[in-house]
Amino acid sequence: MKRKILELIIIILFYCLSVTLGRVIELGGIKPNMLIVLPILFGYLNGSNEGMFVGFFSGLIYDIFISTIVGFSPLVFSILGYISGLFFQKYEKSEIIIPLIIVAFGDIIYEFLSYIGNFLLHNRLNVLYFVKRFMIPEMIYTVLFFVLLFKPIVLINPLLSGKKKRRVSYFDERDN
Amino acid sequence: MLKKISSFFTSKYILILVVLLCSALIVASFFTDKLVAPVRNIVSTLVMPIQDGMNYIGLWVSDGYEKIQEATKILEENQSLKSKVDELTEENNKLKQDTYELNRLRELYKLDESYANYAKVGARIIGTSSDNWYSTFTINKGSDDGIAVNMNVIADGGLVGIVTSVGKNYATVKSIIEDGSFVSGQLIDTGDKCTVQGNIDLMDSGMIRIQHFKHSVTVRNGDKIVTSNISDRYLPGILIGYTKDVSLDSNNLTQSGYLIPAVDFGHLQEVLVITQLKEVGE
Image (tube, rainbow over all chains, first blue to last red; front, side, top):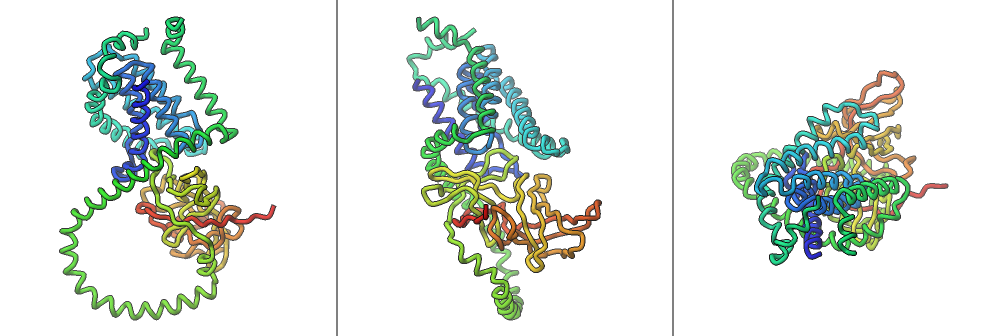
């Protein structure tokens, strides 16, 4: 329970960071997608359930404030959290390549879906322009952001659930 | 018992549940805003103060950084600027005369007056949309300060956008440069109508599209476009921007071109919300 609350606080913090700090660090009008990183990281470090939990709420907070259609981001984020949870405990925790690949593909897919919803259905057919100008740069920037974030989150992660329960929850969290 | 329940909640089932829940939310959000509004208000009371503070820190840091960067540049510039002062003093005298003329013309148009008569509320921008598709931003005044949906937002004497949703202590503003935003405008001198449309393809050039001029209208570069009196959401006579490269369309019926907004959207920090709504006769 304590862990979930702390995760919610982290999500809110990241949301605030992305809407305020985003303006400062944007390059050529492109900001990293900070919220998509969280479910993938937490899913990879703690399993699918946790990834979906973080994904659902980080998507929700994003949608209720910014997007008009509520539910799309939680959907994509939770599925990404689930997918990255499949690799939970299959690799060393410090192995960065697996979640990095998921971040890269996940961000592209998420952006492409929002392109379809926002633009393609409004008869904006110049896909290449959108891919080159928005999706690829954002993906690269997000991956960069993820690399910077990886180590701190790996270090913080065990602290979130308190030290005592660590060994027990190790078995509880394995779900299949 | 508890064991049984928890064994049922394996991640596969949870995933299916989440997917179903999200799909239901998506479908619901096409029809109504009622489900989300209470959640939005609760979360916003928590989030907005944090956002306000962080925004302040962020601006402070970036300002400081820019100051250091520019200090050396300024010293160099100072030299060349001194020589320019003389030149400009002379030009200033000339411009002062122009200003008198401008004031006379403004009175003629009664445009300035209608601007000043609107009741306005100042607000600070505390967040921008965190993805790259939208040009939406959040301001730190909400329904508690008398802000309502469809109120016009201006800055630097030009139109910024329109309020699209309101919470207790924040409001979301959709800017006119956002893709899919339409504003009905007119030429300031002749009153010929046109449509100003935000366009993401032109984001790099800082311009937006302007279209639907009648083919007979003459539009020169730099003509002023203001919001038209037939718009149902925008108050009349607010400056939108200046025309550029308007030419005849291939259908020979309409003209279209580009518009340079009067507002510098890259460096917006404070905006004014006009608390008067356009009255539309039903």
